[in-house]
Amino acid sequence: MKLKKIILMLTFILLISCTLQDIEFKSPFQKQAKIEEFSEYQTGKQGLAIRFAEEAVQTKVRETSLFDLVFELQNKGFSDITRGLYKLITEEQYIRTERPQGVFLLKGKSPYNPMGEIKRINFPAKAGLIDQEQIYEFPVKTTLVACYAYETIATTGICIDPDVKGIKKDKACEMEEISLSDGQGAPVAVTKIIPRMEFTERGAVPTFEIYIENAGEGQVISENYIENACGSKPRTNIQDYNKAEIEVILSDKILTCEPSALEIKKYKETRIYCEQKTTTQRSAAYTAPLQIKINYGYMTSGYGDITIQKKG
Amino acid sequence: MIKKIILAISLLMLISCQLVPTTQQQEPIYTENFRTGTEGTRLNFIKNLPPEKLLDTEPFTAMIELTNEGTHTLGGAGDKIYLAGFDPAIIQGISTTGQQIPQLEGRSQYIYEPSVDAVQFKGTIRDLSSLRMDKYKATIVATACYSYETIATAQVCIDPDPYSATAKQKVCTPEDTFLGTQGAPIAVEEVKVIPSKGTTRFRIHVRNAGYGDSYKNGIDYLQKCSPYSTGLAFDEIDYIQVGDVTISGTNIKPTCKPLDSTGHLRLTNGAGVLICELKNIRGQTPYMTPLSILLRYGYRNSIFQEIEILPTR
Image (cartoon, rainbow over all chains, first blue to last red; front, side):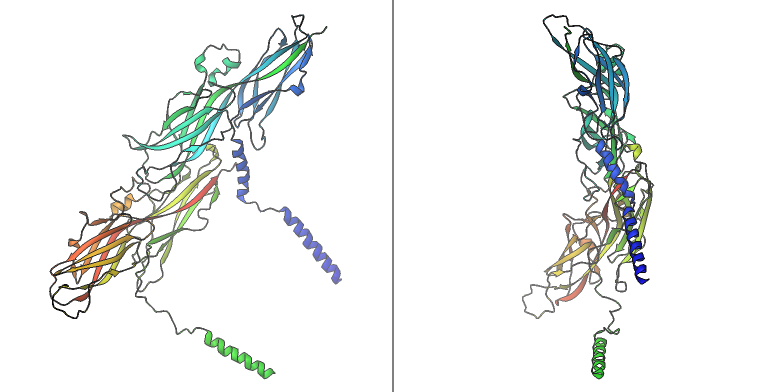
C-alpha cells in the first residue's frame, strides 16, 4: 500500500514536471524577438528582381513551334508593390506573343514572407522563321521591363542638441553623423545623415544634410511616369527620369527641404538639405525620431535567351 | 558526565552574555562634526521606474529618489527636478515646468541621517507603429536644480605684529588651515593666512567637489537651469556667491576680491580663490579666532537612464 502511494506520487510529480516544460513565461518582451526580425527585413538595397525562369522553359525551340516564356518577379524589398506594370520586349519577327503587357502586385519582405512575394508571369509565344538559310540556330533575346511605384522609409533616432556652445557637460546624447550603410529594403537608399544646429534670425534650428543614392540595378522615374515607361502612354518626357518626392519629418514636424524636387541619378550621390521651420526653445539634448520618406517610380528589367532552330 | 555537560553549557552562556554588546553603550545623541561630505542632493531612479524596456501601450512612469546628503535644507522656492532627454512627441504628458523638490532637512548636530523623499513623473507613450519605427531609444535625464549653501568655519591665528623685533612667546603662529569638506558640493578647502603689521590677508581656496555644476545664486538662474528654458549662459555657470565672510565679529566681505557686482566669484576648472583682508588690527598679542565663510549658489546635477520603447503590432 505504501509502495503504491510512493509510485503514485512519483508519477504525479513526473506528469507535472513534463507539463511545466511546455509552459513558458510569456514576458511582454518576447514580442521584441518579432520586432527585431521586422527590422531585419527593412534592410538591403533591392526592390523588384526579375529572373528568366530557364528551368521552366524550353530554351531551344523549333521554328513555328509554340512555347512559353516565363519570368519570375520577386519583391526583395520591404515596401509592397501596389502599382506595377510590365512589358515584354522581343524581336517580333522571331518571337510573337499575344499579351506582352500587364499589371502586377507583390508584397514585400516581412516575417510572414521573409523572401518577399514571388510571382511567375507566363507569356505564351510562337517561334518565327529563320530567314537565313545557312543558319541552323538563331539566338533571340527577350526582355521583361517592369515599372512600379515604390517607397523608401528611413527612420532613425537622432540627437538634437541645442547647446552648440558646449556649456552643459552632461548630456543625454551627442549630435553626430549617422551612417546607414545597410539600406532600407529598397533600391533607393538613404546612406548618411549629418545633423547640425544652426543659428538663424529666428533662433536655433535643427538642420540635416541627407545623402541618398540609387543603389539598385534600375532607374528612378517619377511615379507619374510609370504608365509612360512601361504602359501604353507615350514616352516623351525625359524630365520625368530620376525624379522622386521626399518628405522629412522630425518628431511630428515636417521639415523644409532644398532642393524641393529630388533628382536621384545612377552612380551619383544626391544631397538634400532640410531644416525645421520653428526654432527649438529647449537647452537640453534629447533623442527624436527622424523619418525620411521617398516616393518614386522604379524601372528595371530582366533578360532571357531563346534559341530558335530550323526545322529542316 | 551530565554535570560536565551542564557546566560546559553554563560556561558558554556566561561567555555569550559577555560578548553581546550592552545597550548602555549607545551612540551619542548628537554629532558635532556633521559638516562633512561633498554631496548636496543625490538622485537615483527607483528600480524599474522607468524600466529599461517598455511597450508603447504601457504608461510611462519615472520615480526619482532624492537624498539630501548635505547640511543645507532643500525644497525652497524654485528648487525643482526636471525630466528630459526624450522627444515629447513620443513620451507625452511630462510637465516641462518640472516638479517641486520636497522639503528635505539638511544634516545637523541633531539630524545625522540624510533626509529622503521621492518625486514622480507620469506620462503616456505614443503609438510607434504610425511612425514606422521598430524601436525608440532614448536616454532619460533627471536634472535637479536647487539653491544650496556652504558654511565653513576655520580657526585662524591673528598676529597684529608678526615680524616684531622683540622676541616673545606667542600663543599662536599664523598658518594655513585645511578645512576638508563642509557637507555641501562647494567646499572651502583651505585658508592661507598671510599676516602683516596691522593687516592679515586670507586666501580662501574654494572648489566644486560635487558631481554637478554650480551657477549664480538667484531665482532667475534657478529657472534658467531648466532643460526646457534657453539655458544658463557661459557667464552664469561656475559661479558662487559670497554671502558672508566674518572674523572676530567683523564682516570683511567688502574687502574680498575678485567678486563681480553681484558678489559672485568665478570658478575656473572647478576651483576659485577669494582674497579677503582684516585691517586695522590692534594690539600686540596674537590670538585665535574663528573665520566664518558663507557661500550661496545654485547647483545642478543629473542622472541618466537608458530606455527602449517597442511598438506593439
